[in-house]
Image 1 (cartoon, rainbow, N blue to C red):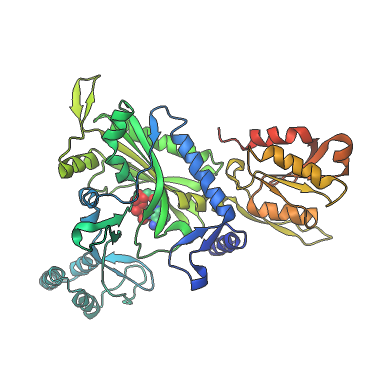
Image 2 (cartoon, helix red, strand yellow):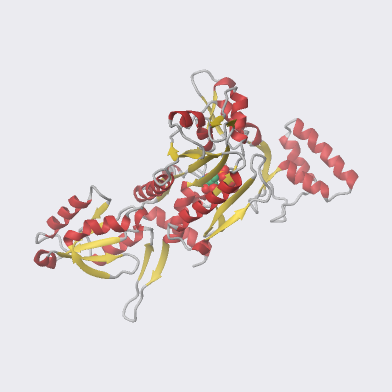
Length: 476
Ligand code: ATP
């Protein structure tokens, strides 16, 4: 299947089977905003839960918090988001590549003779200082500056661009009441660093984990749920003694890759991308990239953020954010290793990996199926309970099994249509196990269990179904 087709087919499948819908679809949708339907919401919750438990339950020195989306506006001043996300940008309509206007013009100036280049840069500086966006666009057009990718001069207007959404808090609209919808969850962790450390008597090294919504007014927002304007992050900040950050950074790279592989995803579909050009606050950084239908792209970032964030918050708030290390008898601002994964990107990764179109045709009959080979622990429904007929006491036995299993995992009951059709529907939503209750069940207390991936079937005791499914779908 061509990759472009695969992406379109996954999008279609997600809509048809209640995983993901375009937001406000009946009003023609809202750009790069999506809603999770009945199965998608379950899948997403399971991924979140697996991450949460991997981080907190499985590490004695990591705790989870749930900070508010709204934070004091000074948080975003201190973090650099207010100032750093407000450059004038321009998009090339053909390649969809977004440029910082100054980068584009500077790049072009370098191709000119020195005198001409300098004159152009002077013009640019004057226009930037005056916030004259129309003038900047004119400059780009007049000089016929081309996009390096498409080679065309087909540009959008220049826009001042801050990725943060803002609104006002309270009834008076003035600058002092501006609040931002957080563009990352990390800052909620930094500003609570001392609260958690003190109230939990945490000793370095320790981590704080959090999942939650983040908002970015992305200009180029496409690729389905890969790049959204409202999305969810799962982040963990790990606080370490200065000087040990390199070692912890390597450990977290390894730990996070192991987590990814524990999803059953092929190692060939992952790679590390080490950052060569580092952000001003980082002393090492890499992405874990997954081979999406659009190619290898970032799903998670691992960053050694030094003491930048805590130092900034200490400076802006005037509150001490140091830690006293009793082992070495020293006060210091801890260094931080961050692991940051997008939940929606993780959903897309899991769906891309799981989605398969299979041709099952034989000489006698044409047949195919779409199956989501989801890891059993993440599947929206773990078990489908299917009475062969709607009579002869079979639904009653099936209902009894449902009652037994319901407190332990989600199960799906269906008595309509042929068994074959019911299996196909369960394949399409990724249910790993189906049991069929038939007349033999009444005689010997066995059921047919059918395995989604291999499509094999066997008879097992009805009484063993619940424990078998618990065992095969557990996270740890
Ligand atoms: P990108 O380079 O793709 O814009 P980023 O480097 O800005 O991502 P981070 O700020 O490191 O991303 O955020 C951490 C994680 O959050 C990313 O690895 C990604 O999984 C997720 N993420 C970031 N932006 C978005 C978005 N607009 N939609 C969905 N997920 C996102």
